[in-house]
Image 1 (cartoon, rainbow, N blue to C red):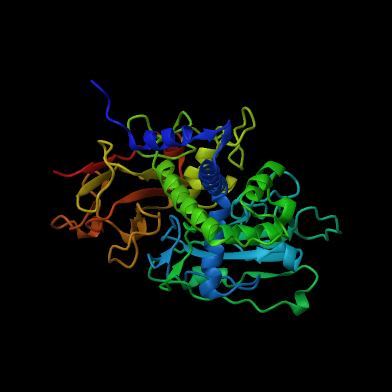
Image 2 (image 1 turned 90 degrees about the vertical axis):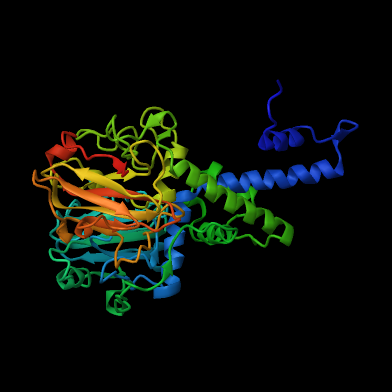
Length: 491
């Protein structure tokens, strides 16, 4: 019996058997293979650059709506809802995000008020190392100020100038820096104190405080803004601007060579003709879809992401320990053993998520956060907006600050627009507990009768996934003695 032909294998077979004449490629073969080479190189460049593309999507999406400059700090003053398209945001804290360019403005000072939790990240979203060697990226509660606030000095690559006293000094590997801040509220009906805390922040040039632009804090809540990674050929124009801004500081010679192979070189024009532009567009669309394939896998490069062996909750750092919270990786997703970049794990992360720091993954009880991602039900079937599910959370949920479950679009990882003001449900929403102290949440297009307080709506016809967050995880979360139930499909 003959095997059924695989269309993809047939396409590869066609490429492999393109004709040569007199031991040389024909004109048609040469053109076909040149186009294929450009497509493959552009596709792989996109996947390699996923952290940059994630950063640029947020930067340009934000600046288009809220304005640009070191003095512009959008704040989601009524929490972040589904109108903001950005990968897996947390709707249960107050967010503020800004994008600065040290190449344009020189060293910048960030004055942080007390009790913030923030991260300063370079263009690759690597936490920026702090002088002294003990801290990377974190600001506020998990940072060198320990939540007391202070002055944080951001220095550009290769800075050799004088460093004044009185600053926490962050030396960035890129000119472009992502400023990501969180502020916690106690009462969801009174967000003002948390917002006002962020509005005390200041960003200004080190040598020009007197002439600094006044801070602007636009309210980003409820304002449509697309801050997702770009998934078409225009992404290469964004990368060209970044290369011009960064030059050799952006990547290794090999990385810059990948960009150069598709025409992106610092200081040189990038004006693809119509034929080339079409191939680049196809490549970006294909690469984005590839990233979404990788992003739904539970095992990547031979490592299972399962948090518990008998549950389907995932986290790429599931094997982290208090002594080694980042597991096998350094802060740039390189394997500690071998020193190589775990490319697919980095793609997995940046197609659905953003930001990463020691403070976020800390396994000191009461600090950091535990994240558990649920793509499937207990049988391994992807979550469907047409089905009804339940999640059993045992008593004494181990979160000193709060816990929540949030739903996200399968298509692009933004908040699920389910008709609610926010796509999340958690401790501060006061769900009803069961008699034994456990909590059962319900996901589906319609609430079970009498369970409305514990129900998160899904959207019929739309796939989605869920993230369970434990903020300030206590010992039972860290040692995994507390274990949430899987997402169970209801009969």
